[in-house]
Amino acid sequence: MTPETHYAHSDKLSIAYQVVGDGPVDLVVVPGWISNIEVFWEDSHVARFFEKLAAFSRLILFDKRGTGLSDRSVEAATMEERMDDVRAVLDAVGSKQAALLGISEGGPLCILFAATYPNRTAALVTIGSYARRLRAPDYPYFTNRDEALKAIEAAAADWGGPVWIDIRIPSVADDPIIRSWWARFLRMSASASAAAALQRMNLEIDIRPVLPSIRTPTLILHAKSDRGVPIGASRQMADHMPSAKLVEIESRDHLPFYERPDEWIHHIQLFLTGGSTPVASESRVSTLMFTDIVGSTEIAVEKGNLRFADLLEVHHASVRSELSRFRGEEINTAGDGFLASFDGPARAIKCAQAILKSLAAFKISCRIGLHTGECEIRNGELQGIALHIAARVARLAPPNGVFVSQTVRDLVAGSGIRFEDAGLHALKGLPEKWRLYEVIGQ
Image 1 (cartoon, rainbow, N blue to C red):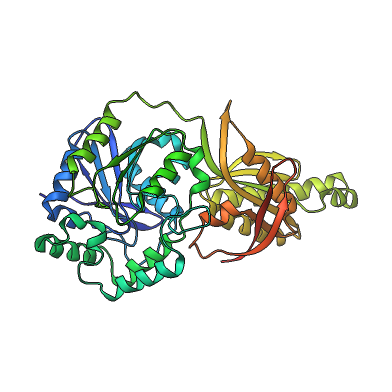
Image 2: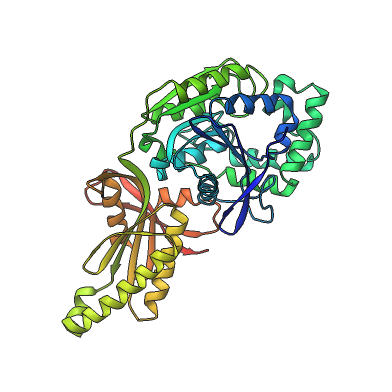
């Protein structure tokens, strides 16, 4: 029987979810490209896979925004927006901490969530996943952009039939019953144009800078002969994640439901129930913002201490108001600047733009720098190299401008935020040169 579908609310959108089982560990399945949590249960193989997961967990299934039973009338969502959907579902089911199981595209989303919310993530499991979706000089997996776009266009042209079944589940690609179900599953998960938009968005995924910061216990599962995602992509992740264990399965299917399903489940169950209780993380990945009033010393001399104090009061009130709007956390205020932390880089950029606009109304000029990286938490305070990078980026920003590191730019791909290359810069005390970008609009 199909479980009852409920709805959580994320950014005014309705996110469909189901809860199955009552085991001791909450396990959230973050689906890949597209999904439909009710059509999943129409295929006996998929249903059995989820039932076996629910035998040792409280299994939580959901459809990301734009797919399945969740709100469809939205553009392809950014990674940050998809993280919000996971958080909304966890809140809706009353889960304080959960293990995350990311399939394919769901993997990088789970990794980014674990980096951002380490204390809400008990464990990570990825299946057939990756950190980047396009080939690069230092990343010899997948195809280049032009080839990937041609494949997406071809799939959209054939939408309605069992598109890519020979790549996703070749072990059963010739079974007429499964071919029929697969075609229906695709149609009920997304329209042709929406599926293509989601695939184009996925081409922008690149979370490689985040991998070394993951301290959450991680199990990486991958079929040795996966036709959808080269196994080298998972090996690359395992090499760069300190707490990761890689298990390679003798299979050619990208999805785990049909070929050796019990072997996939065995490794997941052993990992989630046979290990020790994970300790609370002492680090997290945050987007850090430094702000600085341009020419503050000159202003203080010109206006005098009392009038400058009034100006600072207006400045502080404006910055704090925008931080509140965009869910920023004030870390400290040093003289004429702020250090703030965000759980998403797009929100941080939008907050920075709002701060500049708010301050301009009072004829206050400000420069802002942003960087996303791992921060250590010691005695309740953020520490680490990421803070130094963000501070140096801010010092290079022009008056009434926002500079970001390349890491920030890469993580907001597809958000509609526009950047201009600001060139390579030497950041004091840091090795190599860093490419920076100026935010020019959205």
